[in-house]
Amino acid sequence: GGRAKPNAAAGPFSTPVMWPFSSRPQSPTAQLAPAAARYAVIDSELTGLDTRRDAIVSLGGMRIAEGRIVLADRFYEEVQPTSALTAASIVLHGITPEDVRGRPGIGAILEDFSAFCATDILVGHFIEIDLGFLRAAYAKAGLPPIANPALDTWPLYDWLSSRTPNDDGPG
Image (cartoon, rainbow, N blue to C red; front, side, top):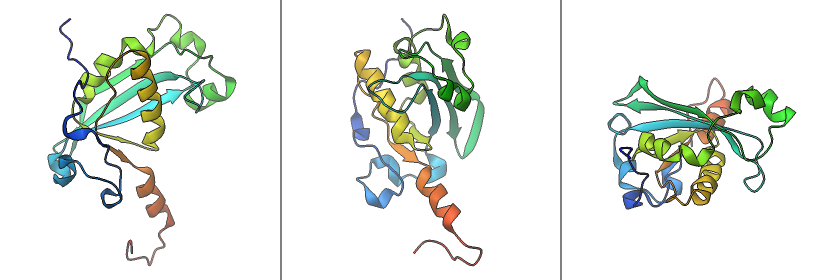
C-alpha cells in the first residue's frame, strides 16, 4: 500500500539513547540541541507487565517538534489484546473488553506506528516497558524492530522528586 514502511534499517539509531546521555553510548541525535530534535512521546496500555504472557491494549503518541507540542500530529489506537484483560488492568487504564471487541490486533497497526515515529526520539515514562512490548509485537509480526533512540522520563522525575527547596541541582 501507500503507507510508510517501518524503520527497515537501524541506521544511526541502532543503540537507543537513554537519559542521562552520559551513561550510555550516544547516537548523532544526542548531539542536537533539544529544540532541534523531533520527539514522539509514547505510551502503551497493557494487560500486565510480563512480555511473555501479557499484551498491548492501546498504543498512543504525540509529536514534539521545534520545541512545541504539535496537537494535530498524534497517534492512538486501541487493539484487541492477545491475552485477557484483567480487573486490575481495567482499573489502571479504563479500557474494557467491550472497548477492544472488533479492534485489529497489534500487528495490524505497527506499520502506521512506525510511520508516525519515523526517526524521532521516543520519550516515555519507564519507556523500557513500552519498548519491551513493542519489540515482542514487532518480532511476532515479522517486522524489523523499532530502533529509534529513546529517553526515559523516570530518572528526571526521580531527580526532581528527591530535591529539597535548598538544593542547587545535581552533583
